[in-house]
Amino acid sequence: MWDSVEAQSVEGVCAVAGASLAGFELPASLAVGAVAAAIYLLGFARQRRLEFTLLDALIVVAIMAVTTSVAMPFLATASDRANSSVLLQNLATLRTQIELYKIEHGGSPPLLYEGTFPQLTHATDAGGTPGPRGADHPYGPYLPAGIPANPFTGISTVTATETFPPTAATDVGGWLYHEETGRIAPDREEYLSR
Image 1 (cartoon, one colour):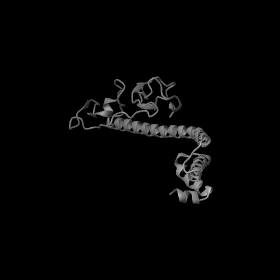
Image 2 (image 1 turned 60 degrees about the vertical axis):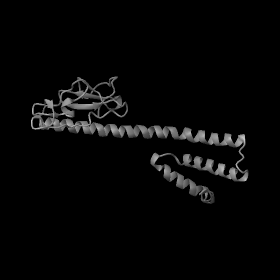
Image 3 (image 1 turned 30 degrees about the vertical axis):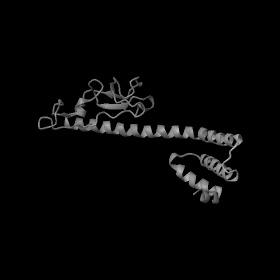
Image 4 (image 1 turned 90 degrees about the vertical axis):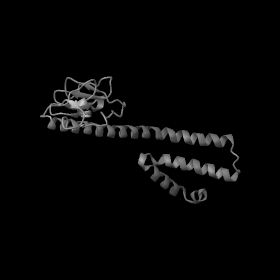
């Protein structure tokens, strides 16, 4: 396998490495650095029959350090974007299920009870009283798996807010709910107005 890698031009190897890293949106210099380190190691391994000097090890460590320092900001950004995407999906799910509850219960939003929505996580009757699913409680459950967590904090607790959109995030970190209107927002400063 390594013979074929060594036989290819550096540009060809970098193009292959860059394509495999494209999903992370890392710069081409990262792929070039990784390939350069691999080619360097392979060349010296063959010439010296696997005898590495301290200088060889320091060069490889330096290449890896530079590559890591370039990659870390991009990986952190990718993680934030993934969390943002999950947060917006969870928010859409919550809003959709709250609206469905309101439609099936004469326009009344679900009530907040001890940081959760029993009326969304259990079946309810026409008046909104939770109970076991059956003829007496034909509606829902709207969120049978429970309240989805805010992916930035891992917390699914819902906190009441007096105004909507909320003016500030709390220290709880889950969701902020305006009980009068049934509107909900993430408990995270940059997402309050969403």
